[in-house]
Length: 120
Image 1 (cartoon, rainbow, N blue to C red):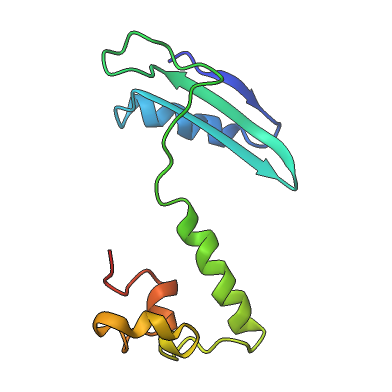
Image 2: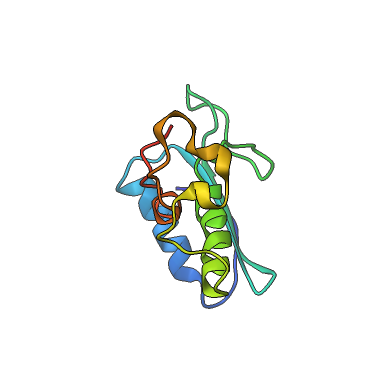
C-alpha cells in the first residue's frame, strides 16, 4: 500500500493502523489527520477515490464525514451539567419547550446526550 503524508515521531502506530485498515479490512481509499495541542501530528492518505479504483487519493481529495458532530454537540450540555446549569435527568422540554411537541415530552436531556432519544 502506497501511503502518502507524514507522521510525527511517537505517532507511528497511527500509520500502522491506517495501513491495516487497507490490508485487513479492505479499505479502498481514505485519509486521516490528527492534531494534538494545535499541531498536526498525522496527515495520511492512500488508495483510490473513485468507484472504479482508478483515480488515486490525493492530498486534496474531498470526502464525506458523517456523524462527526454528535460527540462535539454532546459536550455542550455535559459541560453545562458539570457547571450545574443543566440537569441530565430533566425533560428536554424544561429547557426547550417547543421540543415537547409530537409526544416527545418524556425525552430526557440524558437521552439526547447519549443519542438514545429514538429520534430521526
